[in-house]
Image (cartoon, rainbow, N blue to C red; front, side, top):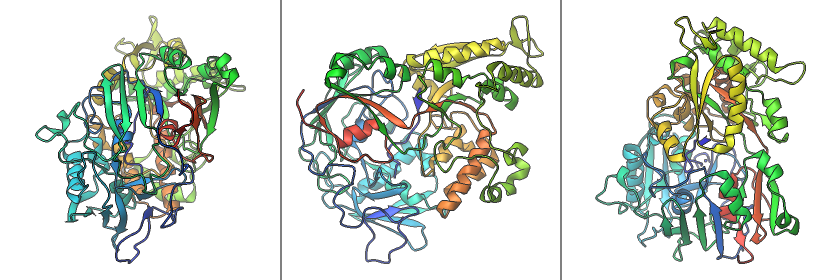
Length: 599
């Protein structure tokens, strides 16, 4: 399954303060939880000991890597390099929404007209080669990302006019438009040295170790097998409040495994320490045995408050077979989630029902007054169904049934010009309805096969194609797929990344997150309105309106979600007493745990 994200652009507002210089934090809508002078986040242990080792398996099913540059389009970046080696001007906390605190910047200030954001750098901030971080480095990083980085950066920074050096320690970002999220966006600019890859085109920087500010250095690596990082003994940020008690391990090593079976057996054999399990079947049936009974390995479900986001089988609208909305709706009717949940998932999941699933941003029922205010000006461009109840995924439990859903799908196909004859679903030219489902994880194959079985009952011919991570990534960057499984980012505060996911412009930018190839002027308007929302109330209405329109386009067959992280680990780690609210499991382990017992 592909996961789309921009890990650095996490971040977070204080109104104009009028002070000689700005504030320690920035929250888009609310007062930051942590006041000036705070010492650490609540979900860390500020006295955690440093040292020891953490052994991990390759994340995201990537079975190798060929570069240390996570910002270029070509190639596969090494596991861990983004979070362990690069830092941003500011960073978000994991127990509040849309808020950032100084990291490389010691303070920040929003202009009275909200058309620029200024950051003053921490004088202690240094790159791992010993050079101080300067405003020139920030400008270089921003300019390079926009001009030479992956296409997502152009979309994310589309409303940023320029980055200006005010003095050696101060940088200002000027904005093209009034957009409440822009301060957060520019606060999330990753910073790297101008000396990194000097003399080499940015997109050709491959295995040259980054000159960056993060707490780790590359220790050693063996392409296709492993990479290890060692904590920088001269790391500059140990006493920064947004870093205190974090990144405690002296060494972090990733080992690469070719598939989930090998990965699980390696974990049980002690080759690595922590695993986040995404397979309900594995969690129920494979995490058992003497080591679990003895307590040598701990099995826990960690609760979280994350919005679930969208995950599902995405249809590429660039392909002619998916052009008709009736066809797309019919394809959704063939997925029997209730059967899968009983037979495959051990009833551990709930069905995804929204692009902003499990949050107040999800559209449900009839449009509210706030939503209608957003939608009415676009009425002539929208499907009339948008103004009715929000679509909900089909069910197969009584009184519904798979048979009834397939009959409805058959009728929709017929309306769209596809009928069953000569052993297949065919159009008026006699051409069969066929497509390929592309994926990069074998664990999803059994799920896909159940879905395919139901599609075959309709006469749809489907080819399952499981390929390695690098090949799938390359095909996705080129939009060379029919249908594939994608998980999009969880967010409680959507912003500029929506342009990259849904805008017409992004649909033509190779490597963008608009995998579905959606081009709709009404959606462009809704995204722009969402990004420019002035209040949380307006943001909620805008997000629900966008969600309502997207759901009525049937561009994805929604999957399922869990409200916990399933984590198994060797019982040799210290864990903070308090969990964060909004977090991904892997970064949480890496950034907040510590070693209590040696391997």
